[in-house]
Image (cartoon, rainbow, N blue to C red; front, top):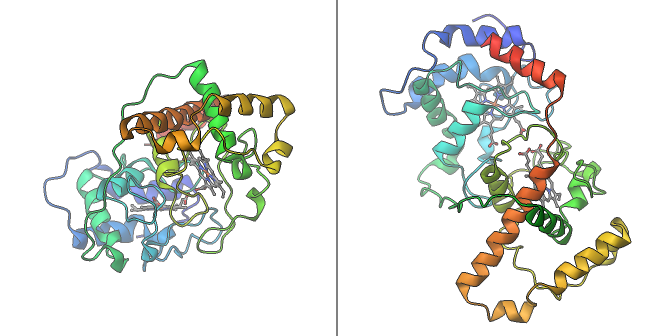
Length: 310
Ligand code: HEC
Ligand code: HEC
């Protein structure tokens, strides 16, 4: 194998070429970590390192850094905060890659068998996966259609849950807390900009729902799983008041007034409570999606170029 520069596309093509013949072929055998090691050493070591610690020869200049697989901490999971990802979670990231980072998509360059095998192999880097019970997977209800009312409500939920303290009042990733955030490995990390044309985990409603429900392990992005059942008698604190216009604060007050109080929530039937929670969660999803910008001409050209090189 020649030395490759993981930052250049020709480098990526070099990794890709040996696999192209088999790309797209369906898996025939159960996943094998032994076969996965061969795939890993060809396609992943340059960034993730031979030992899986994220310190491959090409990792130095990358921001964000390649994941350290020895930590067992994964961002994109369908499981609770602090839990391990499922094999499907890992496979999805490997298939699709991570936009706004150097993690490439592999679905076009590795066969399904190779992708399944490499999942089995990278799990071996962390002892957390040994003997672990399969983690509970979040069940995501069907996405309700968006509406202007839901988007407006989502803006209130965004204000109430203080997403803006990191992501910024207009979602540009520039909240007051944004510049000092660090990930678990001591590297600076920025909250994402919600106006990006392409989110790191994908723009579909279910992925956004998953992210704020499960949090992103190893990063300051918390899980808000238990935060959506706030009462309408919740006080609006001074930082919130100082961060938004008087008009928006008035609208938030009006929204709170129309919501059940803490005491009413305590007496609410479980089913109704769940309905209220889902309503607020999807409102937030649709609000965030309303901020997404259409891709620019350059982005479109770049994507087409990527298609050509595949
Ligand atoms: C060119 C560099 C590069 C190569 C090659 C690469 N990765 Fe990555 N990978 C990254 C970076 C950078 C991240 C972290 C992105 C982030 O945190 O936003 C990452 C993250 C990941 C994650 C973490 C997802 C999560 O939920 O936290 C997995 C799994 C992964 N890579 C698997 C692989 C596998 C398997 C291969 C080989 C088939 C591979 N990567 C090859 C750069 C690379
Ligand atoms: C303490 C700071 C902080 C707060 C508060 C916070 N976030 Fe985040 N958020 C982050 C960071 C850091 C990331 C990860 C960036 C990365 O992985 O590169 C992130 C990532 C995300 C993503 C992933 C987007 C993508 O590209 O896939 C979503 C969605 C998100 N946050 C939604 C929210 C919502 C909704 C709230 C409020 C309910 C919230 N965040 C509150 C810091 C925060």
